Image (cartoon, rainbow, N blue to C red):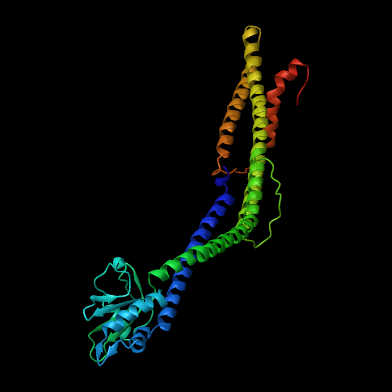
Length: 365
């Protein structure tokens, strides 16, 4: 349930984002560091192959001294095991080498990086590693026996197998540990800062959600905002103001509906009373005429019929008024004001209550 909250989703998204960014940053730093180290090592050993030829006297009278080459192989395997020396022909075929014969897997080396190196291309340049079929390493190379009439190349791999073993051990024991701890520390600090920031951002949303829940629990009849929202705030403040306005409008509309409901109940009660009166009058006159049929004089009978007719007309008018009222309740209708005769209204009231007044000995004028 906690993961479904906005705060939990934001926290999880931040954690994954920091994890991805931290991983990419570590990979980029490692790649840049490796590239920089390769360039530094290759620049420092740029003339190593040529110096080997000159210092070890590998070329005598314009020809390559094989015995001196073998002595150089043996010496550098003991003195500097981080480099590996190979003698190549002009086609890149490996003729001799200082490495362990059981570990050399290539019979030739691609000459394109060698030509780029001799042509002064931008460093670092990676060439084939004879010990591996898919790995390339930095190197130093020089034509032999001389640059004007080369018969092959002295190809020096600057980071041999021994170097890879030692570097891998150091990298595994130091670099990766430091990188992992640095990544974890950055993730922890970034996550903590993000959680605090998200808490400040979602706290107002939580308050707004609580206001909405209280408004729902009270059946939308009472709304009292718990916090004051500043003008010109952000989207959350705007959402809160909109909700407050909407809630106030709902409360007002519910009150108006209740008021209209009370008015309708009062109207129904009044209409029921108004309908009952002409019906009672009409029923009274008709019963009297039935009961005293032979005893009533013609003039009295005429008055009774006239009063019953007036009550019937009054009843018809009330029913018509009810239909008119229903029509006026429609939002497209509006009441039309007009003049009427007050004397006719008084006469209608007199006729309505004349029979009841006579029964009680009251004279209405």
